[in-house]
Image (tube, rainbow, N blue to C red; front, side, top):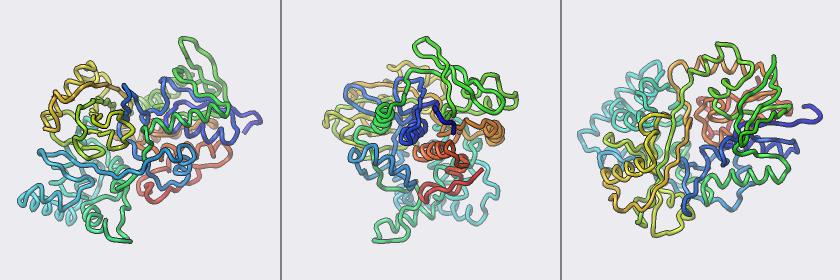
Length: 479
């Protein structure tokens, strides 16, 4: 490091703020640039008339010790320890998720159960040898019949493309280690004292921590700490240009309230979507790099938060909606995450989650149209009546999910090689690396990026790769 370091960080989500937190603890001056007026990124918490709701639900669970220590340092007693209950809504019935084989087979009926078990055993005897797609990955572990029953409809709602176009890496990263056999074993032994078959797969975790007022509480507290230590978090500040030359970044041109300024630094960390990042580089990078970035795709997301004049609707933290007759993908019940999220315990706040592409029909609907759609679909699902809904609020979140589609692997390889040439620039986090990381993995990439600034040689792309998931800790390697 130079004698007078100044680190510039793009993005005030979990990745960017974690990097800033680590740096200010080390006494290094830092400035964080965030185009939105609120910190937290997709992990923010929105407040509406005293009701708090997430942009999706965010469990605080990790086996990464450093991440757990940071959560405890920042919020301490502000965490609640919560029991997880999530189910699948399918054919007007609720099925536990993660799947409990006996519950699932009983509710599907004898004939369907026989077909499912037969399909599963067929997949074990004659597995698909090359798992390139999500469909192939799931079929090998659950059988084709169960894939079509429980995975296909919901997954295609989430991604907006057929399951045979989604790469297997997404399943390996998000539900790694899970199969019908593992789910059955977990169901059999989950209450057995001291059993060695306890929840070893992240998807199966039955308890988690959660801030009293949602995940945004964590990142607002980190923002306050950064300011207290004399560094800056600049909200409403959009990056317009990233000025680089040969093998390093020199400065960033940013705009706030219509005024532009140049921000120089010794090191730079970015958590902004790679596609946007490449467009902002001045001079423009090689054409191959531009094309690679442009080929990356994202899935966007919106939440319709509705206030319901009922104390109880369902006991779950969240429900996956596999009913193909509605566009609704998932329902969060925020009072079941934390009672502090709802000011009146005689009422309920639900988050209706819709997956879409920016600019499509869903995204372009007015807030009123979306609230009306949500009310109609809840009544169609027989969860409540439209007249039970008192109010609603809509939040749109672009580029929520990096897509594992097409030639994204080849594109990322080109981009990684380009970034490696920039000696003082690192990308971190979910969108910064186009990796479907959980919050703790995004944080870990930033912690390791800070260590790299101090002289370490961690390969950030090794975090949450394939078989090493945060149930088993983490491994990193040198570049």
